[in-house]
Image 1 (cartoon, rainbow, N blue to C red):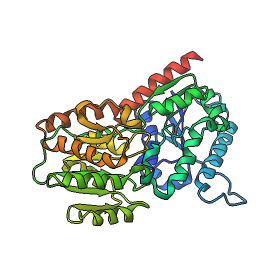
Image 2: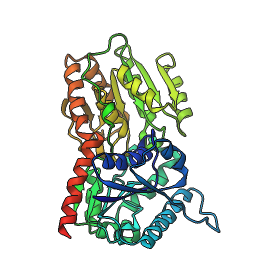
Image 3: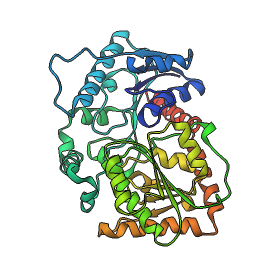
Amino acid sequence: MRVLVSAFQCGPGMGSEPGNGWYWPTALADSGHEVTVLTRHEYRERILAEGRTDIDFHFVDPPPRLVNAPAGASVYDLYRRWQDSIYEHEKALGPKYDVTHHVAWGSLHLGSRLWRLPAPLVYGPIGGGQTAPGNYWRYFGRRWPLELARNVTVGPVLQLNGRARETLRNAAVILATNTATEAACRRMGATDVRYFLAEGLPSGWLGEPRQRPTGVPTVLWVGRMLHRKAPVLAVEAFAELRRSMPAKLVMAGDGPLLEQVRATVERLGLSADVELMGKVPWSTVNQLCESASVFLFSSLRDSSGSQFLEAMGKGLPAVALDLHGIGDVKVGIAAEKVELTQRPAELPVHIADALRTILTGDDWEVRSAAGVKWAAQHVWPAKAAAATQIYEEITSRR
């Protein structure tokens, strides 16, 4: 089947949105489709170095703006103008594809003009319908007013978003990565919305079920140190764990909260037990997952979580908040999910209890096996096969 893939970010060897933008077209091509990719020149060198001559990459950039976009909105302005440019690019080429699939960015709010092309559009997987819990505002600090403003855009104001409304109503299928986003799509008038985990794993990432690591247990946290990912909450939970048992906390990632996290570590007297690694390559994340004792996912707002899936793929049991995309996934005993407490000050104790349950229980190996089994359902070949079934269904409708 001839598939046109739209990927604003498309980065070989990268994680998050750039990684998804790369793995979708390569997995589709590996499964036998004739794939064309729309992306930007920023990724040209990385992409060409991979030598994927079986995929037709079109590098399209929008014309420069004559007036600078408002501060903080420049990347979204670039994205909207890029969407306009790729639509004009493809419209000029005429009908060429059986299906169009927009994979990055996976956003409820930003839309895609490619539904106007003759080929039916698969939009997503997308997130963005989830909102941060209001009583946890202190973890967002001065950014809480911005978070409140974002929450408004998911409510009734979303109906005023013309790009999102047109995309959701005209796409053949919407793939939503959590139930909150699915509900928002239906409120906007989308008729065919299906749950679909956004993240995937290369088949080579999958490990084997493991034996419990020996020595002092290591809690692993991986991600950008952003307010919504609540790294300070992770440190507070670890401090509660250390009250009852020896343990180490390894945090991999950088971001605007790094210094605040460092200060929290020092204030709680944890400097000897916490390692702040900063930004690390994906290969290092692989090694960290293989040596850690438990993974901690503390996000207060997330579509789902690539790091959570990566940990599962390495047979690393996890503790996560029972919230948004992670709340929707069915991983069984592989993870302990912690419900939010009405009083935020009580949550670190509950997270510490969940960490202790995994670290001291006699079922660590069973949890490890369950994680690998679940993650195996979300390797990229499996995701491409699921997408192929959708393609066949929507083209047969026409």
